[in-house]
Image 1 (cartoon, one colour):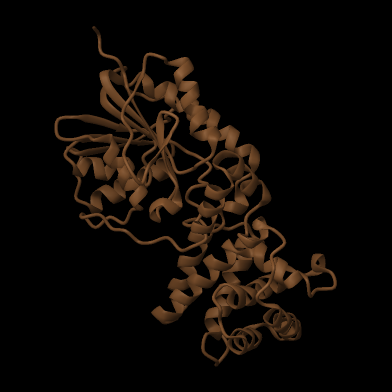
Image 2: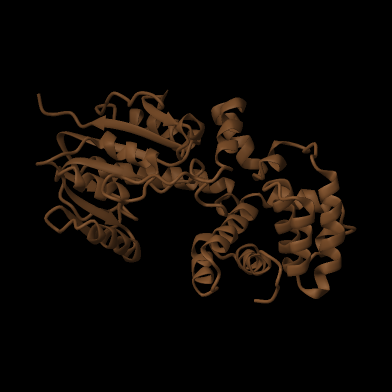
Length: 385
């Protein structure tokens, strides 16, 4: 890549990734690693590229608002120019990069035909800061429907605090066995409370963090996932942690039609597919992919998975339902459905702080402990009298 000023090559690579993500529909976490691998950049510049790509993707609505005020017709800006302008705005407004550095390096790195546009617009953005945002959706760079839905479901204060927390980079937390896993997910696995002598099914196990945790506690775990490729991720992680088939067996199986005999397990964990609106900090492009109707479609899938899972738990056994989201449709409404369809199931005690009571389950808001947002519901299948 061309460019001699510090950070020029890094910015050029970042824009290449941004165009693939924003215009080509590529996933950030799948697009960036191979680009970095063959870039020849230093570790420091690779970290800078990662910050630029993930941060600009996350904050693209805010960046667009910052630059569009100075464009005669924003709709006529092509994807490459849009990516360069977003990149500059992100450095100025979020990273607080000094204007001479942010504007100068961005203009130098930009293609010749875009240098004049970037210079003119980004200088105006720089002199306009700080700004009074037109609303929370723009300020937090969220689709309006997400702000509205979480405000309705959580209340304005908790919703805004959650969205603000999820605009911060995720902390890296590592288990004792070396596996990197968010603390919220670790706490869900702990809540299963499985140990030696117990047979546990993880219905939607990929990539395997919770399944390997449970196996590490001595339980015999069957880790299932509907897609063979994702089941392969679980196998890879099990091997890396030296968990053999005597501790963890991986199968490709549809959780809505599981190939297991009724009552085969002491405990079942259903960490269900969900909207992911509690884990937006880990997936910078997720907020732009998920659509309002997806929440209700996923809630229906969650109910189907639970229906199948109930039959797999032995009398006196337990099922743990969890999702990394905070919408009412995927938490409280699912609990209400369980109450109406399986009134025989007994809700078990919730974990304590930082979890908060949420129906019969527990809610972990992102701002409570700097984790992903999670919901947890523990149920016991009645034993014969």
